[in-house]
Image 1 (tube, rainbow, N blue to C red):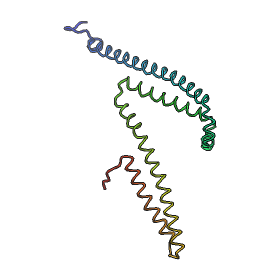
Image 2: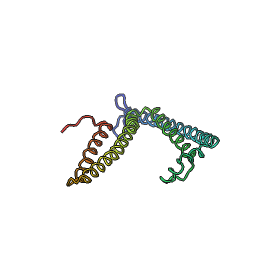
Image 3: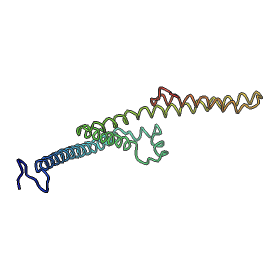
Image 4: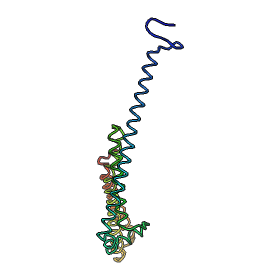
Length: 193
């Protein structure tokens, strides 16, 4: 049964069905090419990462990096935090993972996933801010504790009542300033109340 210029199947226009079919096939084709590109870049990155890991580890062992790290107590520090590997192996692994992260960024960039890349860039750019905020908090804690203990010692030694309370008030004041500085380092530079 034919209508004017279009065939119908179960009352549907076949031109529309055909167009939707080809659109779906084109989308699938683009997806498969994109997936193949991501896979190829990841495999290539993995190979390059493994080669770099082996090369860096071997070079560091040839340069006696592990002996130098033991003299500087870096090996002992690694064991204290639960890493039982040699320092040269740890550095080689860091190089390997940095190369894998670079490969992930390259493969995502090549797929033109711009919204995902925007979020990934924001995350990667947030890491230094978070580390600086953490460093500010650690340094502020020690400075605040130093002022707290010295204030308590001086006031208590001078016989002033409640010297320990003043010391802890000093700690709280320094800690509040440190929290505000860390928040500023994280990008909270305007306070709206």
